[in-house]
Image 1 (cartoon, helix red, strand yellow):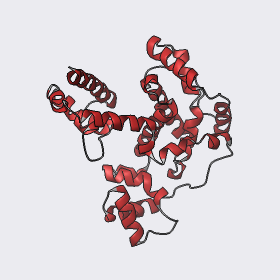
Image 2: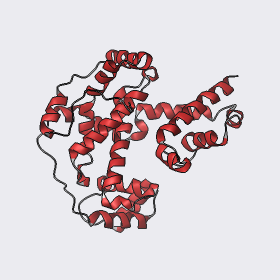
Image 3: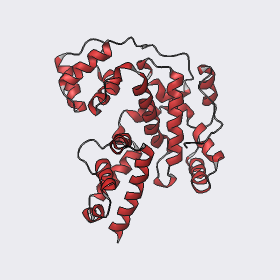
Image 4: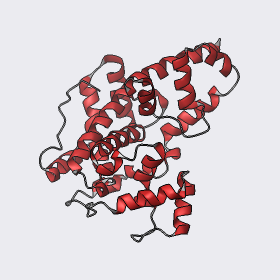
Length: 283
């Protein structure tokens, strides 16, 4: 929803007041959510978009809690997460059969990650994909507060697909920072009962990801190579990097850096390429 100024609460003031405010917005039923999403998609109805956003603001608050260990202001994390939420609403397709909450979680996390990467000292040198993966997962994977033993290092390295020495190096960097680890002020228990953070524990089980994996499998079927041949070089590279790799798929930001354009532009190219491929494979 880039460029649109929706009248939603701001986390820039008193944080406790903000959290209490957003907790009062009711959850939407699936029928309401689908109706609002269609109104926004088909008619550009900003009131409908606002209903989708405000009903999920507490989700952003819940997710922001998971990043408090990085010592950055929670209000800033929430503001960044709200940007991700609005981007998710803009791109949400109600016909996919996926609830907005499970689709939006990944957009919210992406904006928070970008904010942390811009502002936390340590990640100015944590620029590779492996280092970023370690940065965002090592804290939660450590069995305790003590230094990792050699067996722990090997287990974590295997789970994340990185080298043991990279685990040791990142633990050393993380351990050298003065980071606030205490939870924040008192917040409404309803946020915890909603539990959207549980989506983050098993990313491959998230409904949107399952649909994407199924779509990826279909693309590997008959006619794939012919469809790829009909694409220009840049479009083909994006589709292969995002959908047809055996390794970790490239992110929109990875490809944006590679081609020197915005992540949104990569998404547009990807969308057009997918439509073209579907047409080729249906012919």
